[in-house]
Amino acid sequence: MDKPLTRLCITLALLFAVPAHAKTFGIVVGINEYQSASATLKTLSGAVNDAKLLAQALRKQGVDLPESRVLTDRKATLANFKATWQNMLNQAQPGDQIIFTFAGHGAQEQEFSKPFDEEDKLDETFMFFDFDPQNPHRGRLSDDEMYDLFQQARAFKIVFVADSCHAGGGMRSGTFGTELAQRLGGPTGGYKPQPPSHEWAAPDADDRQVLSHVTYLMATNQDKDPVWEINDNGDRHGALSVAFAEAFTGSANSDGQPGITRSELESYVKQRVATLTDHKQFPDMVPRGGGEPAFAEGGKPKPPTPSPTGDLPIKVTGGEAPDGLQNARLDDTGYRLRFEIQRGKAQVISPLGEKVAEVDAGTASEWNAVIAKYRLLAAVDNHPNAKQVRVSLDEGTGLHKIGEKLHFHVEPNSTRRHLLLFNLAGTGQLQFLYPLKKLQDPEAVAQTPYALPEIEVVPPTGEDDVVAVFCDRPQAKAISLLDTHDQHNPPEPGLLLDSLGKDCQFGRLAYFTGP
Image (cartoon, rainbow, N blue to C red; front, side, top):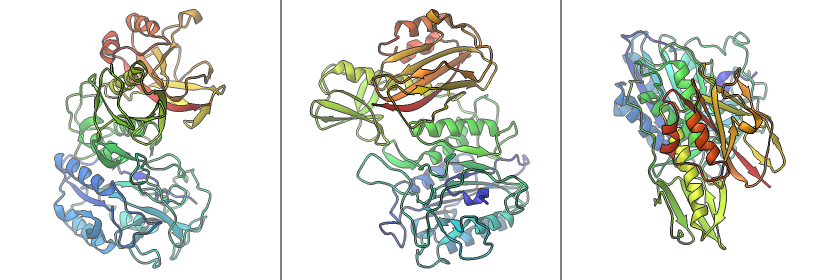
């Protein structure tokens, strides 16, 4: 039976309310380099960065986290972790909160000790610095041991953030020297491939599966999916670590009230991870969010970040950018797009290494159209009311071929019903989808989730992005603006946002199309 602690391709977080007087303690683990590094146990690039980022975020919000509880690389042996964990518990009082973050490799291995409770006969393990693939008793913490560790700490509320993944038998790793990095590697000794299980066990199915003080926030909602490393201001990170750090320091606060609710946390992390990975990684939270506070510390309100409307950072390789480029600046580290020039064409590559479009290498107008698209997406993603609309695609977010029929659903997290919907093609072309005068679409939909009429995939292909906006009143100015730009470059971000009422909520979904 697949119990929650056997799903190592997850981030787990206890998010229950704690008394106002409770203190919060932290322990942070990040491992790039392993004692037994090999072709299958690769050196990582972003795990230590995750540890530093999370430690900074926790301390900023008042969490008790001395340097002795930040364990990286050689300091992160299993024995040192266990001693540090116990020392922390000795300092804490019943009712206090503990935040434990882990960034490093995870794997599946043949069960070697009781309880022999896995249907697939495999234990999921967290791999510490001294992991030895030939010795099942060295340097790994199995899911069963982790369960017991948490069970023995029932007096505390625990937040466990694990940015690692077994992903159908793989490990968190990086592909070095390229733009693409995902936390997925080869098997270790004792691993035998098995079909992954994606269903959560019922709460009362096994008394070992339920810890009343634990809630799970998963890095992906499918075991087989990879956990990506992203380029964040020139450094590699796990997308979930970045999202969690931002959420904890206040970015998840959507109502301006003190603290962050479980619903706010779930909504922010899901949308932020999707955005950071170009909608390639989709976290999940079990149980679902609610209105109760998520943390004893953290979540202090901060002013909304203004939507960026400045130049888009890009990188150019294999040649020079054409004259006449607009609203773009060269940045080799924190770039949003990379233009790779080859044989008169420029392949447009995302920070994850995926081709999102192809343009003529010498035609500035084609470059400008793509740049205009991603400037608008940046403004949408960073709007104070962003990530409040759920956009889903029945056919999934894999590659969709020309001629395929797609079925989208959109749903706000409010009673707003006035809908605006448009698609941004890989080449930047805007396609206005709703409301269309020629179809006599009502501006306000009768109910949500709203199912769009069937959409057929047509050229141009690449990364398409559906953007949904829900407002509580008619938006004649914005509708006119979008209609004017239909089949053309998108409008200036500021122009579109200024045309919308301040009450509007945003959401988007990226998907890939091809021949």
